[in-house]
Length: 89
Image 1 (cartoon, rainbow, N blue to C red):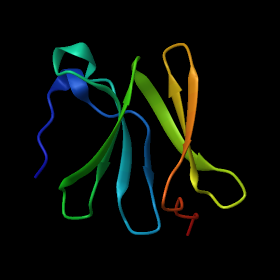
Image 2 (spheres, rainbow, N blue to C red; image 1 turned 135 degrees about the horizontal axis):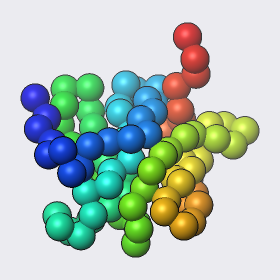
Image 3 (cartoon, rainbow, N blue to C red; image 1 turned 180 degrees about the vertical axis):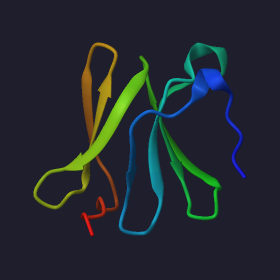
């Protein structure tokens, strides 16, 4: 079980082809990071992308769905990742 405080609730959530959950994080400076967290299907934190501002939403894009776009407070960030976003079922 993953516990989060009310001040760090996720907003944008996407799943990759392996079942990992990619979630925007508005945790902020009170916990030392803002950005994106990646959770394994078992609920274990397996990755984190730190951004200099609060991330409000995420989505996979590009021809191979292997580019993660992160909409933050005042900026749009993008990074290529070693997975693909899951397609709608």
